[in-house]
Length: 323
Ligand code: ATP
Ligand code: MG
Image 1: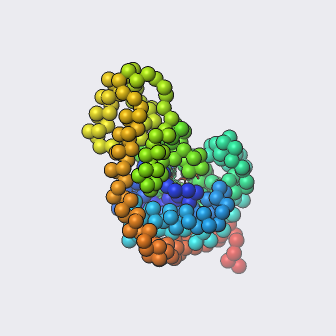
Image 2: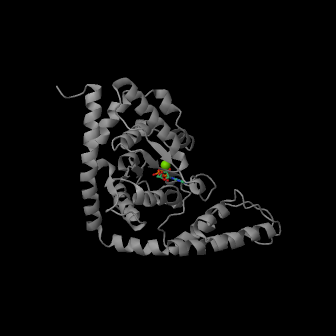
Image 3: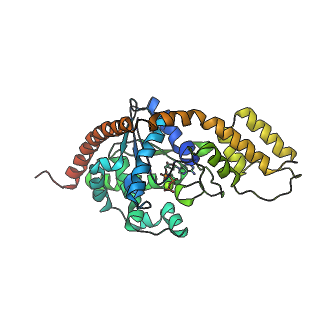
């Protein structure tokens, strides 16, 4: 099994990134034959247009991944732009991608609906993503639910290339975790860096508490029992609290007679305990930025070697080069 996934340096990583995607990266690096994980800085350019910030988020993202358990001895960690072969592959794929396929992409439509400006990069985002996946012959792609459609697009693109030019690409499959495929944000929508509704993984304790207190709840009277199903606070609590704490909280919801402020306090406490060891690991890596750069440089060498071979295969199939 060859695993690949990417994450954008569009802001500090949040609970959705961790519980939906990064946690899977860490689990899969143990069982995969090869695992490739990258910081998608070229994708991030569609939203972050500030060079200092993009650099900071890119190195910061690598530090975060290492702190959360990504092991460079088991997985290849690199930055997307360090593998230019992928951008070239993206063009080969773009020439065979129907407009309609991209027009149907929900994440593009959602961002437009939220008033974010759309450029050609945002529109063709799934093609670069397809190139990212196909360039490493990945067969498993761990992601959150919002990315499943893009993986279907990738399969369509690969299928049509294979059909046209002969078997060239490996067909990938998306992999989501049932319990945390779509972590809600502080407004109940999908938690997303670009929606300003996140709980950051590595906020300091005080800032995290403040964010938790911001979570929107309904205004049912305190004495009423509440339904824990589909409740944002409960959904988030389940991610960071122990089984016993979740059982106690479920009983409290059934009984009623409490305020959401109490649940938020319990959630903030559980979150503080949950993230404490990772926070320590982050401090360790953050103190050694040169070691992180070395990890990324070594990762880029390995990733490039793999992607160059696949690009050559695709170029030959399409009749580009080789005369
Ligand atoms: P942006 O708003 O810039 O798109 P994002 O927060 O959606 O940022 P991405 O870098 O697009 O983060 O996604 C990285 C990974 O995290 C993807 O696998 C994505 O599916 C996953 N992910 C993002 N948000 C959530 C969420 N709320 N729940 C579960 N998984 C998520
Ligand atoms: Mg996203």
